Length: 186
Length: 154
Image (cartoon, rainbow over all chains, first blue to last red; front, side, top):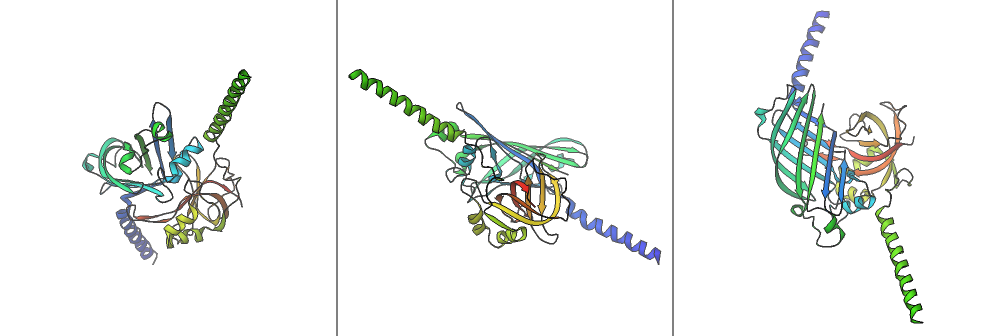
């Protein structure tokens, strides 16, 4: 009797582990950082966001970053308000920005071994309700059970219908801003 | 006489510039809103807030989000399912019932007292809403309501 229970539990554990292994390829992270930086002769503006949700599928190479726009924090309250306003990112209408992409050189990346590799990611970025193709390289670092993905991209604001014809923002905000994104999967 | 008009003209222009400059400087350096010192706009169960979003995200965004990012301050009550740290080393408390699809994820201020927090406790947390809950097809999962600048108030 005892043996049967033991056997059953072994079978159960084996069954569970195979059932979960199909899900295990898709990693989910709520630990990440997005920064953007705008440089002009007049001033430098930087904002940080730690509330992104990311997924990385090590089997298919699919990566997704979902970024709640109102979580960007600026040093100056006034800049934060401008950023959120209808004139800029209109975060009430478009509360999230999203990147969906696929690693095209998946065979070059060994998720099972410690090390750093460069991934070519082809995908689409949606900001302010507008979607544009963005192909970038990302750095993937494997450290034990932790996988970190990092990328830097430059975003031309006019591509996403964010444009200032006149006034202070047109001189103080760069036409192209630098964004960096990092997510940790454990 | 002419000299006097000239003198007063200069004084008026200079004081105008000083006042104007002062206002601009004040606006520019205006501090961020203190969420904890501001009265809550809503008091509700975490589950209710999530359900409103899952029922109609558009209506909920109109209700809770602000055009300039100064969105509604909410006191949510719920059961702690998870306590974690984010990339900025801030404590994040997830209020969610085990069987629910989504919950309310509250990022606490560094000043929040977290020593007595345990999973399974029912707590009330006050914070500012940043985004709503919903199923995201690309992520393939439900996203939680995000609240920041939060503190445990009960």
